[in-house]
Image 1 (spheres, helix red, strand yellow):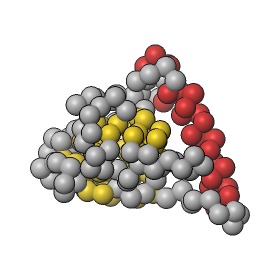
Image 2: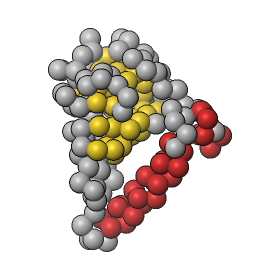
Image 3: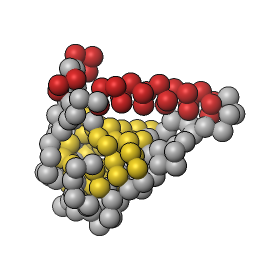
Length: 153
């Protein structure tokens, strides 16, 4: 399982070379710009999706994809990870051309955490159903590149 480590103490100091691929920094800026536009549209009644968040999430003890705790908000703060590789699962990856699934995860627990895609889906470059490990204190963002496949940074 790949381990994604980002500079969580000072994200503004990230260099492009520190990211999984050279385009991730530019992609992140595009995502944030789009999120602001979506939230503004939702706030003004324009039909956009409101930004949602959930704190206090507990990862499924023992891990695995089948019973992983579902993370259904845009921003997900996982506060309880009782043992290594307890698990959570992302929303289904969709990309309609005008809207794509976007999720942010922060591991505030005491152990490493496994993030699974939905069954038969995958994180780009990995086999279907393969999780990504988010280390203690780690932050991971996923965006659906094409339906069923996520980019991550």
